[in-house]
Length: 417
Picture: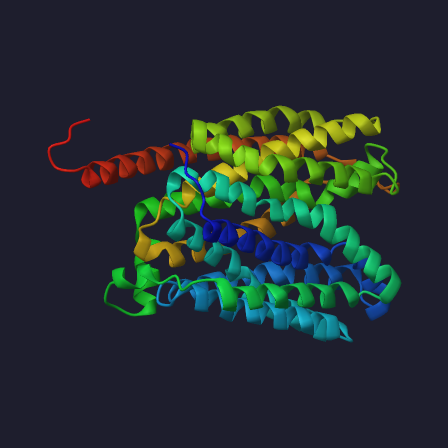
């Protein structure tokens, strides 16, 4: 019988999705603001790139630092603590009047914001059984599409009319409302506290990092992030300079792609619950392996074809992320979920930064802006995706065996089959 979500469960799912929306928007909005930030703060492109990467690297560091005590507290209180820090960091971004202050504010924002995603995933694993986590993750992941469709255009509009500070103040306003909902409506999530083993935070982190099945999953996670992050930094430049899409047409590509993936996310989640997470992951990977080489080797291309290929590519990426996240959520023991998710998120951030740098070493740009060797980058991405399929298979097998063992243990005595 299909699982029917209660009113409170629906509230938790929507709350986590909206919370993720604020985190993703804060992370992504800095890129489009570059054209305003460089002259306003008198900074160079190299300094701006440091502002962008400071968030990712501080988020990676905070994930490892938080992993040791992530399972020692009520997840609601932990979420509130880090979300409050994230809101403070975003407010400091809006108030920054110099390059040094903005850089420091992005570091603060990353230190707190980088842990929130892992806490959210731990909450999902605590509150929802594996058989419906695809549906839950599918809804939560719509935050990425929503930020692309609604958040970034709105942020750019506000910055054009009221300055680059305005989007950060908007995020603070929306995030504060989300924080109030967490305080008032979210119930304590502390069942994992009864399962904690003796020992300090460092020992808990060491044990988490030392478990073989966790290490295999961490390796898969790093390569999973590689596939997406390698194409992202040059997406706009490739569309404009290689595909011939004008700057006026570019928002149309993002809007149509974002709306399509926003609508498809929950349906992909349902599919992963119905046919299996790993099977959905393989289908998404197969589609990506077909689309990526074609897309990366294109020259001047009609707008409709570019939109179609972008939609297909983001469908594939969304299918991979939703199914992989749902499957990976079943790997850690309940007592280790917080630490496991924190380390996992940290490695994703680190892998994203390294992948973007690696992509920069492959792709070159001519004097007229045309990108060269982008097709080579596409084949590297395909190779990484195929390796992840192999890495995910033993994870899927281990999860299936654990689920079967738990089902057998829960079966009443004397009942067979």
